[in-house]
Length: 136
Image 1 (tube, one colour):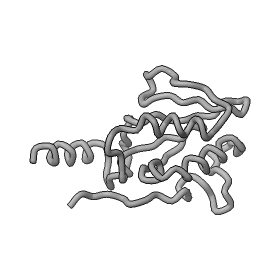
Image 2 (spheres, rainbow, N blue to C red; image 1 turned 180 degrees about the horizontal axis):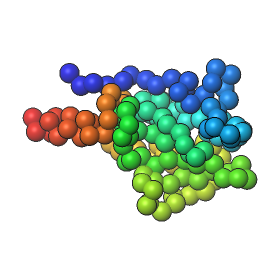
Image 3 (cartoon, rainbow, N blue to C red; image 1 turned 90 degrees about the horizontal axis):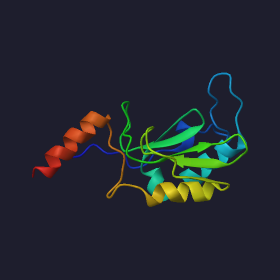
Image 4 (cartoon, one colour; image 1 turned 30 degrees about the vertical axis):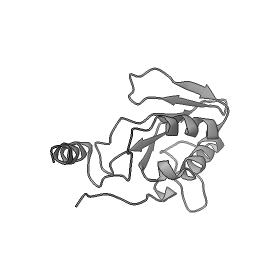
């Protein structure tokens, strides 16, 4: 039986009042909060494991560290705009946009086939599970 997670609640990144959890010493930003809420409204992204860092919103196909890096991510720019990059840090920037909805749509358009629900475990365990499934 595969170890999968059916859904991830936004509480991992958002507090109960809808504000982003703040990295130590950082003020919350309205564009980041909007991004998280828009991403959570997308059913395909809700099936994945969200994580945040450096005002970027990432999505993983597994729930534990080391996360997968095969899905583009969205970051906020200082002027309230968004950028989409990835799936890895060495990938070129895909686009910049004024709209959180457009940024999220770009991520959804680039999801790997059969993406989700998130696998309970880390990237290595997910890879081993996928290899065993492919060998059947």
